[in-house]
Amino acid sequence: MASGEVVDVVVRILAILAAPLGGMAIWAVTRHVKLTHLQAEHETLRRDKEAVEGKLEETRRHAEESRQVLAERYDRSRRDYHEAYAKFHQLKAGAVRVRDERDALRNLLEGKLAAASIESDGTSVAELESQLAAAQQELIETRDRIEEATRTDGRIWLRPATGSVPTFRSCEERQCTIISVLNLKGGVGKTTITANLAGTIADKKSRCLVIDLDYQRSLSMLLVPTNDHKLLHRAGLTIQHFLAGESHGAKALLDRLKDLAPELENCSIVVNSDSRSGSRGDDGLEETETRLMVEWLFDRGRPDPRFFLREALHERAIGDAFRYVFLDCPPRLTTACVNALAASDYVLIPIVPDAVSIRAAENLLNTLRSLRQVVCPNLRVLAVVPNMVRIHQGNPIKQHADALGTLRIPLRLWDETIFVPESCIRYDSEFGLAAAKLDAKETLSLAIADEAVRKCFKDLAKELLQEMRHHESRRAAAVPA
Image (cartoon, rainbow, N blue to C red):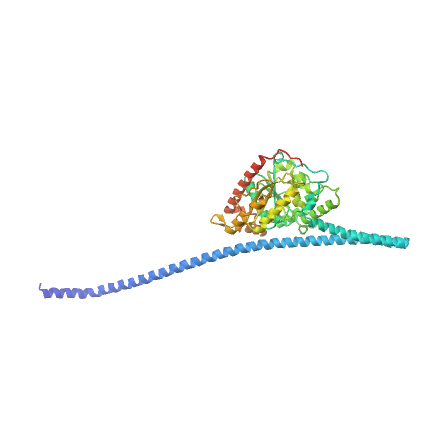
């Protein structure tokens, strides 16, 4: 075939293939362009997704921080409300008592004065008027003495014991360890540590009893629903009914127990309540302990109210029922607080890592040194437990670490080395959430239901139990009161 014919054939073949090949080329170019646009859109969406996820994480973090701040504010507001309400109720009750006593006395003397004015001459009337004035002055002085006695705080409790004082029996003899959780500064977490530490130890099959001696009733509100408060109050099954009763033996206390199972196995509580919980007009704990103090102050023939709890808790019946007793104390030296110290083997002092709390611990140690001379010679400081510590990368933040570093100065005030556990209680919102659940009538759930909080309290319980064994190895078998 001639070369011209070959060229002609090639040209014809190319002409035939031109349309398909052109279409394929256009398709390939179009597909490439689409893929390029899709890749660009995918990259844009990926960047947008990462930006949105970053904003969501930041929003979640801010929301968690805000929730924690609100939880703290809620806890503080609730404490402030209960403190203000309790103070108002106390002042109102005191004013009513003083007014009633004054009116009764005035009516009595004015009646005698009227009768004497009929039957006697002017001299008798003058004498009765003088008696009335003297009685009114005595009433004023009595009221001042009551107020002064309340203000003297610890000094009134340093009076020598009167009457028969129950014997202080050793832990070994009663087979039961009694621990007061106390700090004379509020807001350091006494109730939180009492409840969660008892729950942790009870989880080890050791029966625990907790007694709410704080007039603010925080422990009772944390562990017992409101309706149960009312039933216990109306039935006379609270700690103030025990203190005001005629009998202060173990049976009188054991009859007032409320079992916390199944939510909190191996744990029981003795609650306290206020007069709003019942219909019989009974006093709350604060009014009861104030009345007991005043009656003892002006009538030394009455039983010494500082040792009512010792009488009950040092009977063997308590040791047969419980291995540990935790006493949640109020932030001042009330009758109930002194009862706790007089009955206890140990005092556990919670603090928060700030200068005010450190100074409060120093004041408490000075107070305990004075009380040991009369009320609680067998009392030992088990530990000072840092609470609400903020942790960063496994260590307390600098501000808290610096505050805790100053603890060594006040701890020197005690005549024995005071133990400070390595297992401090970190700040955790689970504590506030646990209280809110019971407020909402949900099932009782302590903060130790959270795994991290539970581990923290397990480590703390292990250290405290070891420190107790260290103390008991040196304690005498029995110490007289």
